[in-house]
View 1 (cartoon, rainbow, N blue to C red):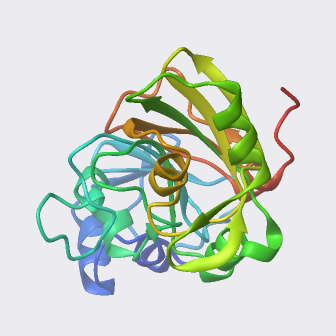
View 2: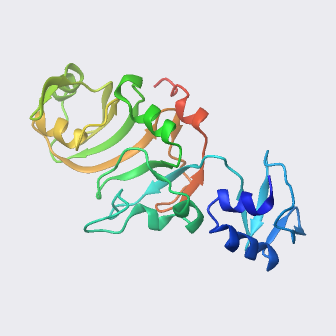
View 3: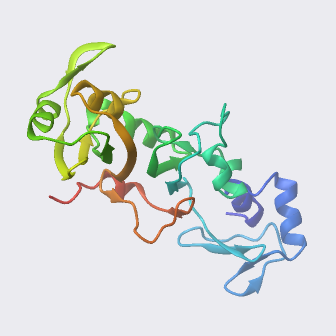
Length: 235
């Protein structure tokens, strides 16, 4: 693929802007300054250096963001900054969007991509992709609450019971909840339905992907669909 087309596909601006980056000597590959926008490069395993920063080529972008509190998962936020402001300009330019949403006060693992088919695959209820949440509760957690969450609770907008795929106490006032659906405010409403209240909510896992322990709030990293779609480990 021609260099200017590669840069364009990765979100570095218009074709003319991408040509300008090359002509200005701002694109390198393996230490060599690339000065011809029409130069053909293999994209397999390609890592360019653009304006001094490494950029691996991805035909489709998929990134993991450690979402902090105080950000909305929206392109047009109403009350707080968008999570998009935490990403570099090329990713925003190529149109990545969250796979599902986390509330403004919810933290943890958020995936964003420009792959529409993958968004459908990971959010469709029929695929049962598990998401794990660490829940801090206002009141103590007891066995009856866990049993009810596993058996199913009725939410006010759906007569069919909603069940946790897995649920266990992780502290006297905390639980770990695994869901395979994505209803509006689902965790908070399920916990309320068993007589408790969510005071803190953090997503620690999405499918086979766990939030890296060394990724700080607001940080992001590339990931791949195969890892997300892999079965999570037991336990």
